[in-house]
Each structure stands twice: as structure tokens, then as C-alpha cells.
Amino acid sequence: MVMKGTSSASRVPYLTATPESTENHHDTDEDGDERRRAAGRARPARDIAAPRSRTAAGCYHRDAMPVPDDGEAFLRAHPVFAGLPGRELTALVRAARDVSYRARDYVFMEDEPAEGYWIVKQGHVKIVRHARMGRDVVLELLGPGEAFGGVAVLDRRPYPASAQTTEASVMTRIARDVIVPLAERYPSMVREMALMIGRRLRTAHDSVTSLAADPVEARLAATLVRIATREGQAAGSRVTLPFHLTRQSLADMTGTTVETAIRIMSRWQRGGLVLDEHGHLVLSDVAALREIAAAVDAS
Image (cartoon, helix red, strand yellow):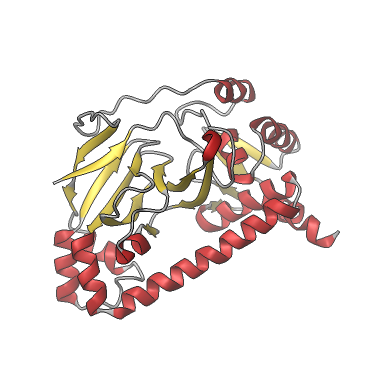
């Protein structure tokens, strides 16, 4: 069985309509390098993880691997599958496949037939709408345990957006002809999907409101706090973000330019508010960042 991923040197944004990003996930976060990367096109990294063949459309095909022995516990922990009987879950694990991707590979493209329900097992994926004039709109950034593609699969419509990895990642794929009959037998799955979509819609509404009303500094602080709260690794008063996050990525996530993100982050680094250690951002004063993010509401 084969899966499709896509080489992705061409599109890299995050939360709002921004110019096409050009970051390279292996590059450092030094300000001068960030500016140079913002002006040039990144080269695709060579894949050594799995054999691939190039198609005329520019897509890559990868071999899918059976879900390992820990797959049942992984799926059981997901709210959509938590209520399934043991026999159904065992059959689901046998049908699921794990697929590995490089940084910035496409899991699927906008308007492709929805052939699978996906769960992030390792790494991160961003959900992207490709807009006119070469600009992209990033709708979500999803991490381990978060699912995507389910609504399109159940509705039997094409994927409404693209899914692109931000780092080397592993996705668990459940084929449409497996999950649709399962959801018809167990309505609790559909209910959990609806609750998940509702939470994401509320988050999207807050993000759109912030983009329309808040200054860039408040949006940037709120973004860092949100990531730290969800996935940060705390050590005393410091919180380390567990994945590589460049200035270009921060700019795309907050709807600003890379130059503005560099300027604000440099000022915060000089003040000791954030640090950059081995390619990972460290928030040394989360409380102060929360105050910056909330300053608009207090004014």
C-alpha cells in the first residue's frame, strides 16, 4: 500500500494570508539568516527515510507501514475512538497505517479526494488554504494526538485545505472505507468529531478577532503563550517550545512580516524575555508575555 506526500519547497505559511514563506527548517534563527531566507527560495531536503518516485504532478509516493504494537493504546487515547469495543479497535489498528514525512512534505493537497482520516503521531502539520496571488492562509497548527481530514471523509467531499508538515513527522492514516462504516455503526465517533471541530472553530474565531484588532506585539506574545501552554516543556520558571520555530514561522502565525517579527523578538531577547537555545525558543518570563498579550484588553 502506498501513500502520497509532496515535496514542499514552494509553500510555507502559518495563520493568516502572508507572502510565500521561504524558511528552511534546518537553518538557524539568527536575524541576518532569517532575512536572507525570507528573500530566497529554500531547496528541498533530500529524503533518506523512504523510497519515493516522482510523478508528473510533482507528488511523491511512500510506502506505508503497519501500525506498531503500541498502536492500539495510541488510538484508544484518541477521543474519537475511546468508546469503541475492543474487537473494533483491534480491527482498526490492523487497518491503519503509519506514514513518515520529511519537513514541509504535503500529506494531501487542497481539492484532492478525501481518502483518509489522519492523526499526528509525531511532529506537526499545518492546515493550509491556497489563496490567490500566491498567498496562503494557515488555518491550524496541529501536534501529536490531533486529527484532521475527518469531516471531508465523512461528507465524501474533497479535502477543503492542504496539510503540510512543519518538521519530520509520522502520521497515522485510516482509510475512508474503514472509518466511514465504523462511524455509521458508532455515532459517538461523529459526536466526538463535532466537539473537536467546535473547539477549533472557537480558537479560529479568537485568532481572526485578534488579527483584526490587536497590535502585532500582543499577537506575537499570545501565540508564544498559546504554544507554551499546549506543548511547552516547563523547567522552573522557564518554558521551552519543543519544536523548531523560526522568525518567518512566527511572522506567518501572527499575520505580520518577518522583519517585524525579527525586530520584536530581538528586543525581547535583549530584555531576557525569551531565549534561543539550540534552535528552540525558551520563554524565560511567561507571565510577562501574558501581560503583553492582555495589554490590549486592559487599555
